[in-house]
Image (tube, rainbow, N blue to C red; front, side, top):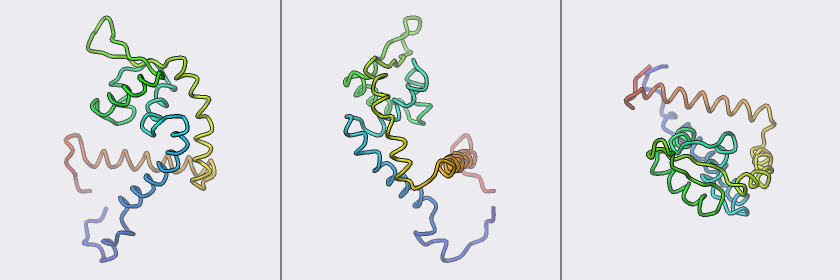
Length: 159
């Protein structure tokens, strides 16, 4: 990476990767919103369910780690999903501090009701399957690079 001062164009909003990512994220989330609202779900609740449909039961800690969310963010999501009857939380009898999250029968059944969502969103993205997969790889690489750049203590390091 170059540490040169760059050009004046580097400070244009249209040249900021952060703004392009932010705008794209909001636009994609806006596609999900009405699709999920029909089912009584929010986008973050949908993400929690995706984690559980992959593998359950999971600990609250595992759910948070999978979504890169802290306990204070995951806990209210789980509470609302439990109130809706889609999940159940249980304390581990061997370790009362550990709470596991299980899908209910209704939560498992919900999976078939959202099966159309990825295809619908894929169409809205305007990407074929290959381009969508390439985008995912690129975004994962970007995430890994920025995490490595921040380092363990969160400080940035120049390349």
